[in-house]
Image (cartoon, rainbow, N blue to C red):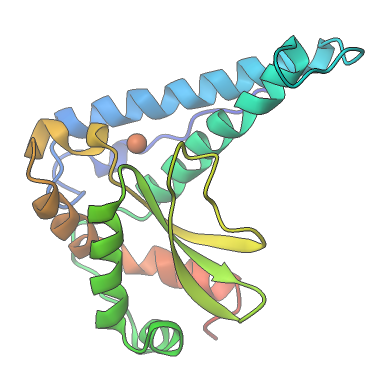
Length: 200
Ligand SMILES: [Fe+2]
């Protein structure tokens, strides 16, 4: 069954800190493109010939290689838009305690996330590492289907590809990052932490 793009229009009208409607609408269009491609790939995979897979080129092989691009492009954007806010929420004491255990302090996480986003050409994700029971910052290098940590659960996704901010900020990436992190909807993050049983 085809996957439907989620609607994030509730962010329009100044509800996402520092992001104009023009910027957001352009980004929504890009996100919907990933959803459409994911559906296209998965539909073709339904009937693709599996008899001659090949590393260099084969239709089935190529569909499988590109599937994570569309899949992660879809999922990460949904996590990114899902936690954008206007800056009116703040991290609770319980949420801050989770960051403290993993990064030493909430502010240390914030500083590290800024540094990751300024280092990355695209995504930085906050992930939960089942092995250590701690949160990690994952600077996703290369295309977004590569460079992801294994055996982790994505708790938050931060998009610093130029398409996410260039209309509003041009080369002022640091200001975008500042507003992005200042506008996180902490009620969403706390809900994700609760689902992972990181907070009670
Ligand atoms: Fe994006």
